[in-house]
Image 1: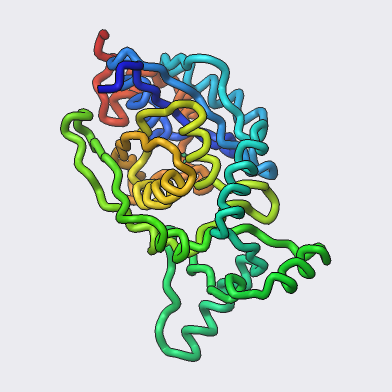
Image 2: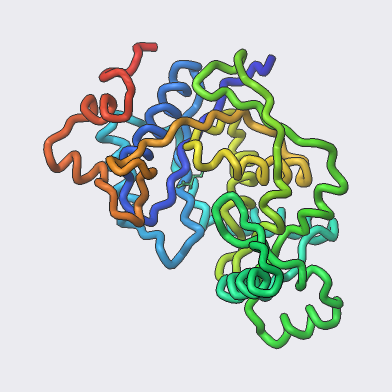
Length: 300
Ligand code: GLU
C-alpha cells in the first residue's frame, strides 16, 4: 500500500465562468481528498492564452471560497510551466513518435469532406467529433519538413499513434466511478480511436493531453476526479504516461450535470454560472443540493 497521503486536484480552465458541473467536480474532489486525509490542489489550465484571463482566475477562486473549498499550496498555472511540457515533447520527438503536422483544422475538415464525396463513406472522427488527422504529413520526407518549418509554415506537433501503440502492450486504467479505491474496476484503454492527437498546438507549445499528464505526474496526483466527458481522453493519457514513464493515477469520472434540455452544461453555451446563482441569493448548501450532494460536507 502507498503510505503517503493521496493527492487530488481540481483543474479548471480560466476561460469562462464556472457552472454547476464544475461545482460538482470541485466538491467531490475536495470531499474525497479531505475524507482520505489527502491534499487538494488547484491547477489553472490556462494554456489557451487567447481565452484565459486573470479575471476568470479570480472568479474561480471566489466561487471555490463560496463553496467552502480551500486548496493546498499555491495554484499551478500551466502557462508558467511551458518548459516542462517542452521537455516531455522533446523526449517523444527523440523517440521518433512525433511529427510536425501542417494541416489546419479547416483543411482537415475539407479532407474529410472530400473523402466522403469520393468514397461515399464517412472519414472517421475522434470521440470529441473532430475528424481524425489524415496520415499525409506523417510520411513527409525529413528535408521537406525542415524546409517548410524554416519557411515559417504554421504547424502543430502530433503523436504518431500507430508507432506509439506498436511499442506498447495493452493499456488500462483503474476507475472507481462512485466507489472506493478497493472497488476500482480496470478499464481497457482504447487510444487508437483518437488517431494522431495534438501534443503541441500551432499557437501554444503544448496541448491539453500533454500538459495534463505532465502536471499530474509533477504534482504527485494520485487521484483524478473529473466529469464523464473526459473518460475517453483517459486512453490518450495512459499512452502518454506509458511512453514518458509516468505513474498512473486512479480515475473517477463522475456523472455530468445536464441542463433542462438534457445536454451537458457548458461555458460556451452560456449556461447559468455559479456567480449568477450566488448573486441570486443561493447558498453553498443550495448548490450542493442542486448537484446531488448532501447539503453539508460529511465531518471528517
Ligand atoms: N481543464 C479541464 C476542464 O476544464 C479539466 C481537465 C482534467 O480534469 O483533467 O474541463
